[in-house]
Amino acid sequence: MRIDLHCHSTASDGTDTPAELVRNAAAAGLDVVALTDHDTTRGYAEAVAALPAGLTLVTGAELSCRLDGVGLHMLAYLFDPEEPELLRERELVRDDRVPRARAMVGNLQELGVPVTWEQVERIAAGGSVGRPHIATALVELGLVGSVSEAFTTDWLADGGRAYVGKHESDPFEMIRLVKAAGGVTVFAHPAASKRGQTVPESAIAELAAAGLDGIEVDHMDHEPATRDRLRGLAGELGLLPTGSSDYHGSRKTCVLGEFTTDPEIYGEITRRATGAFPVPGAGGGAAR
Image 1: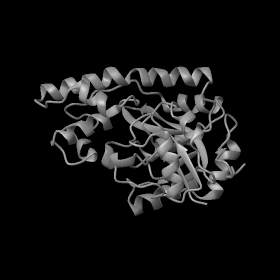
Image 2: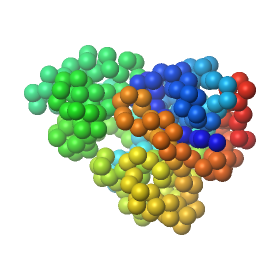
Image 3: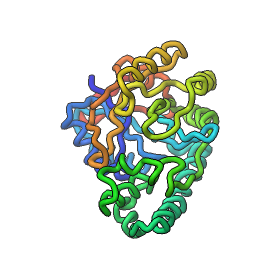
């Protein structure tokens, strides 16, 4: 089985619609794909409706958190999307995205960048607006060569000239909320230092003690030595090591299935989840 547990659609900052994402996942030879848009579950219905035969969909989200001033992302899988407490927290994060993005556009304008809110809205196309949409605007304006080049202190990285903070959840509380909603939590790209400051391994140990289920080990932003270190850490802490592409369509260079999750790890994730079940396409099969 080929299993990719971290992908984005136009419901947040990807360029594939949810329907295109599942069709492209099937074409890429995947057996299981997770839809993990930022702080939203809005793409679920379209993805399920378009799910091809032989492909299983794992519903999830990538949730924005902050610990001791450091931003981190928590992948949540197979939770009940209507559970009130978790829904309320996701809405707090999501509702802060537009004022934050508007403020970053204002900062860029003060720096002499001719970006407009209308341009960012067009790029977001109704998705959950975020920094990648603003970064795409900078690419369109010829100020950077790629989205990743916009995530520096010159522009949009944490602490950068145009950066503005937003409401982000406490990760310990987020673990509690996701578990109460029947879900499973995995710390996304925990050592992606090229994105900015990362939390120390001691913090990962504290999160594990609080009920964190896993860490994303195999990821494009982790060098081979980093992946080896994280795999060892996962073993020490009893965490599930996952792998995934963090696919964003044409917005990033990663491709579907670039990194994958071991079927036994996937089976354990589905075993632990009680809030939702993987959805098999017609003729497909879930692993639980």
